Length: 287
Length: 287
Image (tube, rainbow over all chains, first blue to last red; front, top):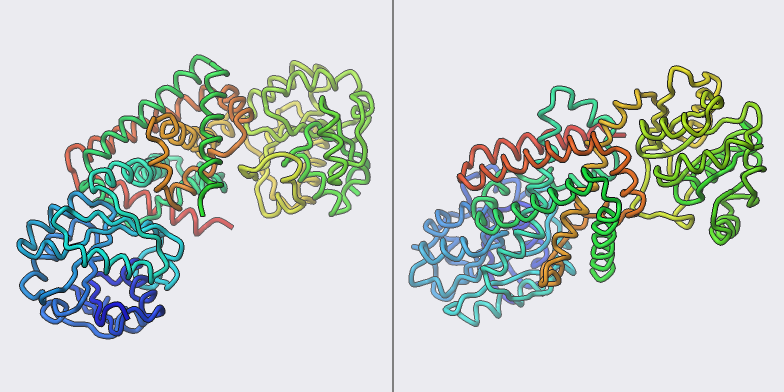
C-alpha cells in the first residue's frame, strides 16, 4: 500500500484508469469519488472505479486527490477542495497543459501549494468517459511531472511511486518546456485533424468526399474524435505555444504548396524523404 | 478462370496483392512480371507473386496487363508496352490519380486506348514493396474505375470481374471528380502529415519533441511513412486539385488560429464538435 485513500475529481478515462491500476497493484485501499454529477458518480461506482461517492469535505481527507478534468476547471475545483484539505494530503492533476495548471493551483491553494504535484500522463484515447477506463492504460507509458521549486519533495516521490505502481515511467520536466513540447507533438496534431475534418464536413458536397475516405484518412483523423471540451480548454490554456506551432505548421504547408505549384519534384522528394526517415526512426525507437 | 494470363508491371504491394488474390480465387492461370529491375522480379518470383519474369514482347501477349507503379511512370511504361499488345489485351492501372493517367494512356496507346481501363484500388498501407503483398489486401475495399466514353465496355466488365474476384467493391467515377475527391481525403492528409513531421525533424532540438510524442502523433503521422517517390508523383499529377485543397486547409487552420488567438472558446468548441460529429458519423458508417 502506497496510500490509504485516493480521491478522484473526475471519474472518466484517466481518473478511472488510475484508480483501477492502483487497486489492481494493491497501491491504494479505498477510492473516493467527488464531483458535480451524482449520476456520473453512480456510474463510476457501478463500474468499480470508485468505492464511494463523497462531498468535498470528505474528499479533502484523502491521502491523495487526483484532478482528472478539462484543465479549464482546475482553479474552481481546487477552490472547492482547499478548505477541506487534511495536513499532508497530496493534490495532483492529469492535465495536458502545465504552466496554466501551476498558476491556477498557486492561486487556489495558497499556502498549501507545496502539496500540489502537477502531472501529465502521456496516455489517452479518443475514447472518453468512465466506460473507457482500464487498468492497463498507463502500462509502459510516460508520465511527466512538472514540480516547482517550492513543491514538497515527499509529495513528488509519492506521486512517482503511484504512477510507477500503475505501470508508467515517470519523468520530470520544466512546465514551460512541457507546454512547448506538447504544443508541437500533441496539441497541434489534434487541431490540425479537427480543422481538416471540419473543413470537409462544412462542404455542401461533403458526403461524396467522406464516402471515399479510407484507412489513411481514418488514422490521420482518429484524434478528431476526441473530446471537444477538453481540447477547447487545452487550446486556450496553451495558447501562446500553440500559436507558435500553428504558425510554424502553416509556414511548412506554404513551403510545400510552393513546391507543388512550381512542380519542384526534387523539393517534394526531399521533404517527403526527410519526413519518412524521421517518422520511421521515431516509430522504431518507441517501446 | 476470368483471364488466362496476367502481366504485372510493378510487383510491389498493389501489383503483388492483386496477383495473389486472383491466383487464390482461381481467376487467373499464370502471372508474368516485367520491369527494369531483374533483382526485383527475382524477389517477386521467390515470393510467389509472379510465375515468370518476361520481356515487354511477352508481357504484351497477356490477357490483362496491370501497371502498379508511381503514376509518373505511366506514359513511358505504356510506350514500352504498346508495340507488343496482342489483339483484345486489356491494359489497366492502379494509380492514385486518374486524369493524368488517362492523358498519358491516350498519348502512349493511340488506337489501342479503348483497351485501357483506368483504375484505383482504395487500399494501401504505408508499407510498400513485394514483401508487403497479401492476398486479402483488397477484401471489402473499394476500387474506383474511371472509364472514358471511348473505353471498350467489355474491358471495363472484365476489370470489374477481376477486382470483384479479389474481394473488392467496384465503383465508377468521372476521372476529374475522382481526382478532386482524392485530393481532399487522401492526397492532402498525406502532405499534411509529411509537412508536420518534416517541420519537427528540421528543428535543432527536434529529438526532445519526438521523445514525448505518443499514440495520437503515431496515428496522425502514420501516412508520413509512405513512399516518397509515389507521393512526389501524386502531388505533381494532381497538382491543381491539390493546390485547391492546400489553400482550403490553410484557410481552415488560419480560422482556427484566429479563434485561439482571440480566446474564442465558443468558436473552438463549435469547430471541434462539428469535426468530432462528422468523424464519428463517418467512422461508424464505414464497413
